[in-house]
Image (cartoon, rainbow, N blue to C red; front, top):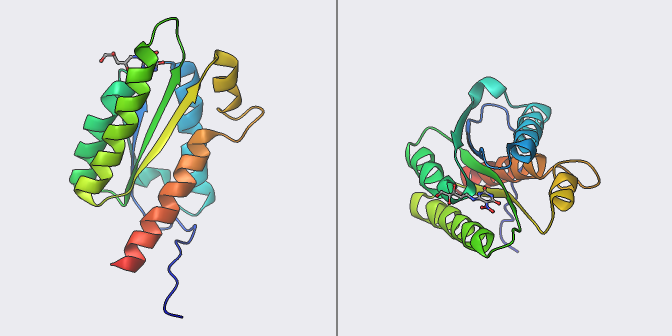
Length: 155
Ligand code: INI
């Protein structure tokens, strides 16, 4: 068997960009706290984290791509909360934001992590912000650390 590559959960010396949506800030603020907590608990420094706020999840991809392309970050994390409404508006927002973030990482080669909560109800979204379920922002940051280390190993 050849080499097995696996990212380690060590954030020491790593820099991160976080893009957070202001829409549903009640949820996204908790995701941001969770992401910063994960970075600190894995040996990273919050001094090495830059945070950019955007109006809504639809705007995440553009700023994620800009930060990823800057070459300043080992990984970029997108945080948002899309909650089902009475119309189909949320479907377009969630779909475009996922597509755009995936495109940003493929175009730049920098891991861009999708930390967007998609929920049918406000209650479900609250659960995913760290009440009944793990904080999605914390999980997104752990994925960012793992991917950043894996990309470093792969060279
Ligand atoms: N933005 C969100 O982040 N979450 C939502 O649930 C949401 N809904 O349902 O409308 C939402 N809309 C705003 C959107 O992201 C853009 O900011 C807006 O369309 C301007 O481009």
